Amino acid sequence: MVMTQLRILSAADVLAALPMSRAIDVMREAFTLLARGEVEMPLRTAIPLPGQTGTFLVMSARAGKAFGTKLVTVLPNNPARGLPAVQSAVVMFDPDTGTPAALLDGGALTAIRTGAVSGLATDLLARRDASRVAIIGSGVQARTQLEAVCCVREIESVFVWSRTASHAAGFAGEMALRDGLPEKIAVASSVEAAVAGADIVCTATSSHAPLLLAEHIHAGLHINAIGSYTPEMRELDPTILGTARVVVDQREAALAEAGEVIAALREGLIDKDGLVELGDVVTGAAAGRKEPEQVTVFKSVGLAVQDVAAAAECDR
Image (cartoon, rainbow, N blue to C red; front, side, top):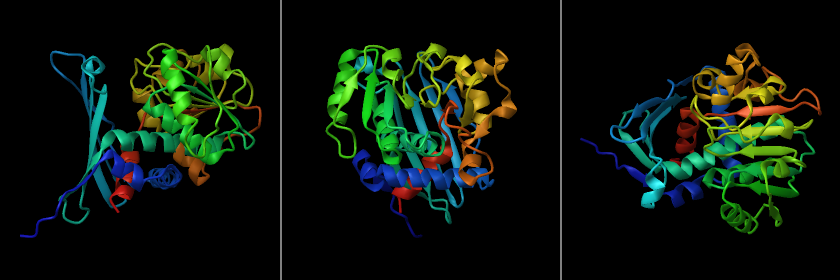
């Protein structure tokens, strides 16, 4: 019997194998496959954990020949134990034999692929002259959001806001030292102050109450909203969606999991048929930004096809 050795890729291995510029290209390829119907992907399965507020998530997909599963635990009390609230691992399988082929650090992979899909959406939807960015949130996801946006636009200034000012200051200090990012990253005193002069806004929080409000929005703005992924969560005031061109990673997933989309539908602010899928914009089946003054929103809940495509690239 021939035994296949299971490759184990640490966070450092994933980061080395999947630089952000390549990750954006991988997401473009993944969403092209999704738009063409070459992906099999059920909605993520959420299993409540007994005796605590935690959740176990299972995200599986096949994209082309590649297939695998991401296993995620969400334990809100973990930070008090000195552990991340969200932890995950991705398992990939040999496409011919079905043998487990690779085990990858899910935290690094998720951060990269989530940033990369926002980079892709920004490339397709933001104005070509966009140069000012607001980052709402200061965690791991916020870092890759900024990195990805800087891959597709010439960014000159960045403002960051976080509920904890020291976290925002830490984000600004760290990110200003990275190659390819602006050297001056300012800490904003409020969400409104961060967004006031921005061309692109990225929200990367776990908020259950809207942080970005309708009065913060101005003409020509592009928004990447990636933090919320349950019906109860929302980072944006749902009324924003009623006046914007809304692009989602997948319509079915957004209708089931995106709190802002669900609320906007319930309030009659949008129609589900008006939601544009990112894959259709990638392939040209649907338009992205239609005019310079239009407000565009990319709402992502995260899809298993992103994990599988990114993991397959790392496991080459």
